Length: 95
Image (cartoon, rainbow, N blue to C red; front, side, top):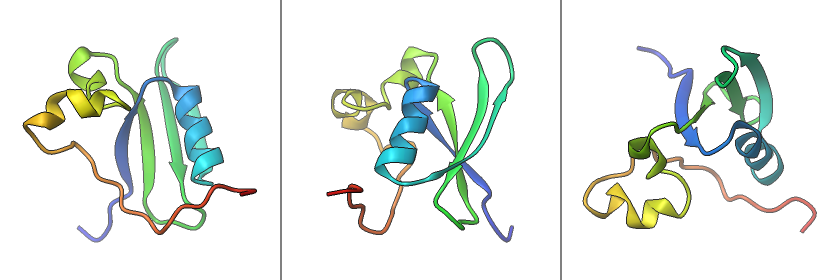
């Protein structure tokens, strides 16, 4: 294996996930493709990056515990997080 193209990140809502990665982290929106009425293929990535993120809506309780504040009280208490994202320092645009 020479590279990783995508990592999946669970989000509570596609649009909220897109907004967060675009406005807070300044990622580019690479693709949005409707798969079904409720599922989309959504790819975001930092500008020029070889690896992107696939945003997936958590649709089970087991997946939902890994989103947002639930991380503090969910399955992280006794296990490792499903994904760690290491980045360069992030500064809010316009601040």
